[in-house]
Length: 466
Image 1: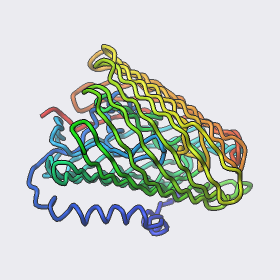
Image 2 (image 1 turned 30 degrees about the horizontal axis):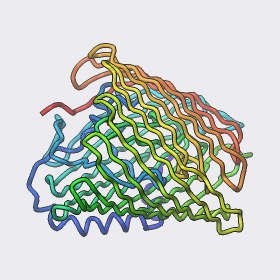
Image 3 (image 1 turned 60 degrees about the vertical axis):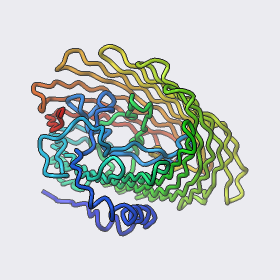
């Protein structure tokens, strides 16, 4: 059996230091006081995303437990949730002080095209497992959460050993006085160009009305690092001003076993900053306006660009079970290589609906954030998610996403993902799950490529009510 190990240390050394410098600065600011906080708050839970994740055997999925960075999209002011606040009502059964073992999955995976190759599809049968660990300290005023999700996949058919696919995240929060709040999120992820796990294209939180988009499957191995920092000031009882800045690094490479296919490397560095104002009209709705500036450096295409955008936001909880958020505003893209400037109307519409035993989420966006394809202009994206609890033990969900990228250096790129899952819980902690997905990409530098992915496995969750 041939062994092939992924050297994460080498990948990290090759990554520009911008994202990690931001994280280091946050640690310097926060650790002097956090380390003296002896409040044993439990680690972050994922209860708000239970209905949004397709990879769990129960409603306490760990998919949303991993905090996502503030998007470089102009449609997000960069505000983040408190993953370590005292409002957490769930703890882990396996917890050692501030360290908790949150969940574990072991499963069989079938991939009809594990290299996502357009001309030489290769099937794969594999055994895989992944786990989620969290370390959280702090109190209501300041907190630090570190989350780590390792992933291991062993395939006898392809005679290789894929180790190191993982996600490491840092989330820091500090209240400075009665008005100022500092938030910092840093995410590092490495994803080989083979099937890992079936995740929903979006995850939603009904408590906040926010929806997090996941990147689409592609032909490439993805190395991504991103940091977002926010300073919020409550200038009045109903008014808040937020200053935000961020950095994102993405490296896509195609490691193919085919002689006729060459490795392609695409890299982008994005710096962004902006300011936003929000006003609470009532406890259930608010309005806001914000300006965002993004600077993109794309290696290999000469597609360096900058974006200026003005965004208007309307957010309303129409009733306890229905949430609506609309964002719209003009945007200007300016290119360094002489390509004519582009103007666009950015838009986002989010609808979240809770029924008796089911949840529904729908999202449309037009923006320029990273979605799995490196691009220097705008894209249109559609996502949907529906989940239902038939009994306290049985749960099913289905959904999909579709995106159209409009890069200036090539033709349109279209990507789609559709998936479905079924879960059965036979105890509070243990359950079984099965999921299926189909993904496809076509256009630009990517010939039509498709894959089917099936997983069947066992899920354990240590989370339980206090």
